[in-house]
Figure (cartoon, rainbow, N blue to C red):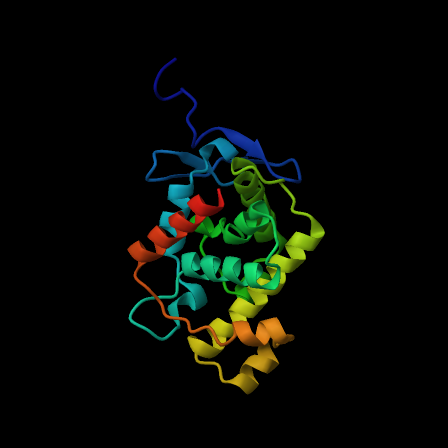
Length: 215
């Protein structure tokens, strides 16, 4: 077989949910892994790659106060901390799931919510496949239990409100109109936590350290 006819990762085809063949799309990671974005394998997911990517992806498209962007790695640490405050007895595996709740963004980036709506359901399908691969790689079920997913979603909403009002320039009235204001005694206490963006290397270090504690 000649080099010109030998199949490569770029030439091999997979099928989408409609059964239509599409070119395989992969990204090479610093670990050396090649993660297929359309058909991700848990074997190609590495925590160091996730931490590297998330520490350099900016929340709010970088439209935040501070010398550094508020990274998705920092946001993930915040959500995991909030989950622990809301449910102090939560099993470590589910706190690990909270830390990894935005893990797909290490390859697809952090699209703001209005843009995700404009992209349509195809983006959500891609994100879901990546999330399932991450879960399986780190000993979690492909689909989280509903109660755990709802808890993480609640924590994510609290984090978004905090970031909006502390970092992204929203005043309280505007944030109340745009987001659901967190309710409850625990949420009120959580909102007093100060947020300060940190440099990507430090965000990566803290993310990996917390993952190691939870693993």
